[in-house]
Length: 116
Image 1 (tube, rainbow, N blue to C red):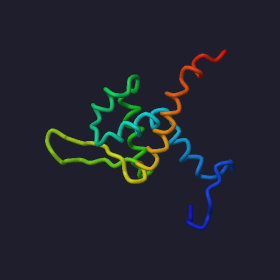
Image 2: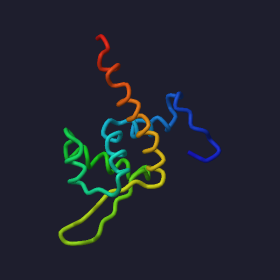
Image 3: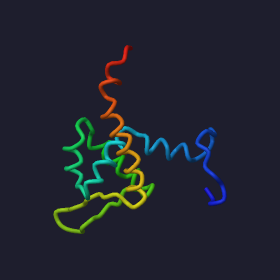
């Protein structure tokens, strides 16, 4: 999207909706705040996020890397050693997500006590 065109996530055909889908994905919302702690390897992320499969973690990391939110660092060693860290853009998004996480924690009792 050229710089002079503004994103409009309310427009059905706006490409910004794809970005919202990536950053609003449940796994992205869990991976990004973990990387605030610093670089992490794949196995560390797997242990930290209960219920995520290796396939979903790999897909999530690749998508976040494609959008320049996460940086992949391959040390070029044998055995292979790779870690993931937030880019500057990813850090700015993490700040927003961490605020959302704090809100969920603060309001969890009220939210979980709702009637279905």
